[in-house]
Length: 389
Image (cartoon, rainbow, N blue to C red; front, side):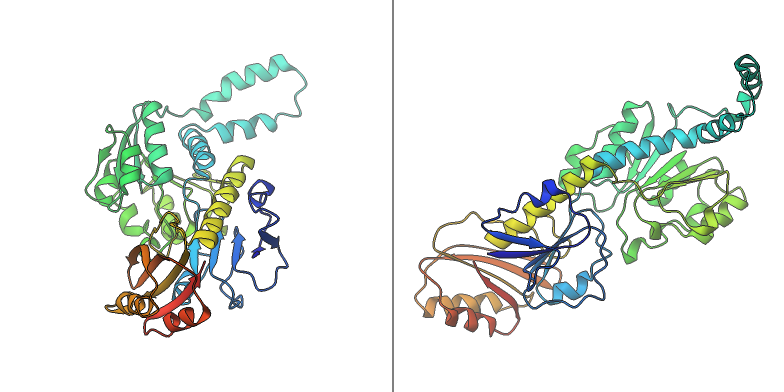
């Protein structure tokens, strides 16, 4: 029986994917082979020797010590696209709130509680409504930085809303490219995108290369009436530089799902309490996707949507299955195959993939594998972790 430890409140729709006769699932599970979690920070958590995989029910994995886990042969999964629709809808709301002073107008109406004559209230509102006038988003240019699962959806939707759309993503995947409308104009640099957009929406992961991607230098390139939407990660925008740019009229506004003390109380900033993926449907989709990926890895060794290991999949071919992680150096795979040959075990099928300094292998062999074979493979120089499935 496989053992799964849960963190946070995982949707029951996702947890129900784990068959009771094959999985023991609990927040108290001892010696777990897998974790499933949302925002639980694992950086200071002791790592059980049994752990081989972690599934994050969400896109971001900065709460997981991915580099350390990679070195220990632990696969980290995320769920890109599972919450895309929820984030998409909130970004549309952000665009509309940023183009017209809807929020200010609604607050003003609530201040009229002292009036008891609807006719007088109507006359006052007719007189004052010009204070909350804005502009339409139709015809404006939206710049999309990052054209992955969410960015490509936003780009296509903005076109349907009558906006002009420009995009920048030097590492766009083939899958995302297929989903993207040909009407999205590709920009050669983020600098060109920032200089030409009325609204900019950010959809890049929080990694060292994107920390403070929006800073005093990039902000200086933008139109003075431009506004930035950040529903990706807080670290992508330098709060200090954003405040300075707003104070000096370098840009017109900031709409974010990541509040910070220095941004509070400003009329040119709209803040939401990190609710981008906070819908019932998104939480269910993320949990189901995380559970399915975790199960496929534990039962078959297949890897899909890992942030630290290469995508690797092979149909079961009968017999026994070996999976192993190794340093991405020569001769490791050859040494493992020699061990199987010496044991007169016939290889039915195999796949070898690499990602950076790590390689991952799935090998199906005829017959049964004993503990001695596993120990011999584990002893090969460069092998990080082996599993017999």
